[in-house]
Length: 97
Image 1 (tube, rainbow, N blue to C red):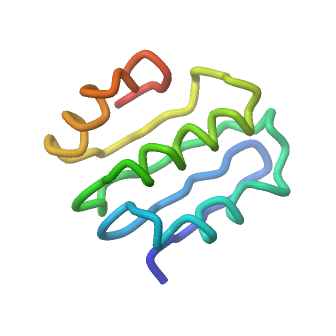
Image 2 (cartoon, one colour):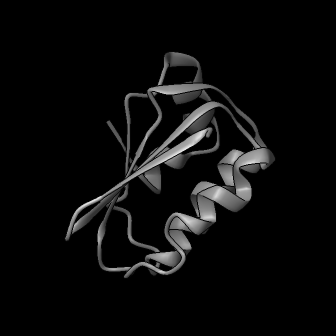
């Protein structure tokens, strides 16, 4: 599986692995679609080696699920992934830690 999900009563941590692209779309959206938008969401990018426009779009779908909250954390990103996120100004939409 290229995606792991850890759930607690107040937080969901989504851990994609490898290329964060359209191949993960269904699993990524399934990981939160039936969950409360009020939970804390964390996307652990530590095992992501590449992100394309589909991956960037999936993060936006997660943000829309939460009602546009900007407290979703993107953690452990490599420098290359972090630079891609900043290039599209996602540092304004998410907490990149």
